Image (cartoon, rainbow, N blue to C red; front, top):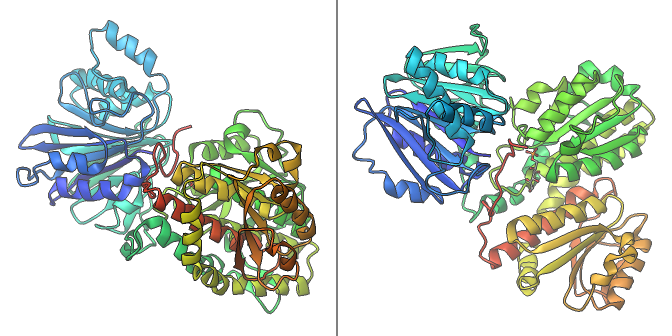
Length: 613
Ligand code: F6R
C-alpha cells in the first residue's frame, strides 16, 4: 500500500527512483511523484494516474541530482488527483516528504497548525505531517531532529522519507507500522518500502524496526530510535534473484506466478519432508515443538486470500493433529478483545508479512501472553519479525496483486504444519508416508493441470459476458470456492460468490437461472455423492455448470451429462486436493479478466500489501 523509494549516492537519482517506482508500483497506482535536490534546489514533480504519466513529465536529461525520492500512491485521505499525490511540502516549500501509512491525529495537528498561521493545499494527512515537520525545522534548523520531534507527537503509522533543501546531502527515513528497508551499497543507499526496489543495486539490507529512524548521507548511516538512542542493526542479505522480478515472457505477472506453482511448491517442501519416516522437519518451529505437541487450541488469523488458506489449514490441523482450530479475520480479531489463553498458539498467515490488521492481531495476541507463529513469504517482514517462531513459504516475490502462488504455498506449508504436529501426536508413520508421497507428487500434477490452460481459456471466453458467477464446494473445497470467487471478483470486476454447496438450498438457490454459470468443485472425496445432489439441484434450475472433477473417478459418469464443461485434475488425497483444485479457478479468473481487457496485475482500487487498516 503505497510504494516508496529514496536514493542517495553517485547515480542519477531520477533514474534510480523511476526504476524503483516501477518495482513497487504494485503497492499502489493512483498517482505518483518525486522530489530531488537539483543544484541546491528542491524540485518536485507529481501526477495522478499511472507511473508513465509521471515519467512523461520528467526530463531525464535535465537533471543530474544524486539525491531524492519517489512515491506511488494508494489513496487513503483525499481523492487520487495531482494535488493530493505525494511528495508533500511544508509551508516554506523547502522540506519534502513521502509517506506510506495513516496519520490518525492529523485533524488535531491540522487545527493546531492552522491556528499558528500555517496553511494547507491538499486534503491529505501527509501534508499535515510535512507542515508540522517544517514548523519545527523552522526553529531548530536540523531536519533529522525535526523529524524525530514531530514523529513523537504523531499517532498512526508511517514509512516516511524526508529531504530538505537546506541540508542537500541528507535523507531521513523513519517507520512505525509501515515497512521500510535500507539497502546498503558502496557509497550509496537506497531506502524503500520493499526489497524489490533495492535488489537492482545491492543485496545487503537492514530492516529498521518500529519507532526507528535512519539518517543517511552518501557514505554514512546512523540508525536511532525516536528516543534519540543510537542502535546497531544487523545487515542481512536479500534471498531472491533479479530475474524473479521480470515477467519472463508471460503477458502478466499473475500468469507467470500461476505457472510457477510447481516450482514454488517444491521450494516450500524442500528439506522439510522425510519420506522414509513420514515426518516433517520445520526448523523454524524447533523451539516451540514441545509446546505445540500439547497445545489445546490454535488460532489462525489472516486477511483475504490468506484467510482462505487459514480455513483450509483448520481442516488440515483438526484432521491430522486433532487440536481445535479457530480461524479469525485479523481485522475482527484485533478489536474484539478475543479470549486467548497463555497456552494458545496464534498463527498469522501472510504473503507480504506487512498486512496491518494481521500484524496488529499478532501484537494483540502477544499482549495476551500466548505464543505467536508466522507463516509468511517475505523474509524479514514485520510479521516474520514480530512472531515468536515461524515457517517461510520461499515462494519468491509475488508481484501480481491477486495472490496465486503464495496461496498454494500457504496451503502446502499448513499441510506440513498439520502433519508436523500430527506426527508428534496420533498420526501413524504409515499415514505420514502416504501423505508425504502425495506431497511429492504435487508439482507433477500441477504441470498436468497447467497443460489444460487453452481449454480453460476457451471456457473463459464463453462465459466472459456473464455478470454473476457462483462457486460451490464442500469440505476442503469450500474455501477453494471462496478463493475462486475472490480471484474472479478482484481481477475481472465480475460479481462472484463462493458458498458451501449444501447451503444453497437455504437461500442462494433462488439466484439460479439459465444465465448463471456455477463452478462446482466436484472432486473425488467422501462428500462427492452429497455434492452430486447439490449439483442436480442447480441443474434442475437451469444453472450452467462448470465442474472441476478428478480423473478416474467412476462418479464422474453420473455428473458428466449434467454439466456444460468438465475440467479434469489428477487424483490425490482429499487433504492435498485444495492445492490442485484452485489452479483451474486461477486460470479461469485470469482468462475471463484478460478477455474483458482488465488491468490484471494492477486491478482497480486494489494494492498489494495492505499496510493500512
Ligand atoms: C487477494 C489478495 C489479498 C491478500 C490479503 C492479505 O488475491 O492477495 O486478499 O491475500 O490482502 O495479504 P497478505 O497475505 O500479504 O497478508
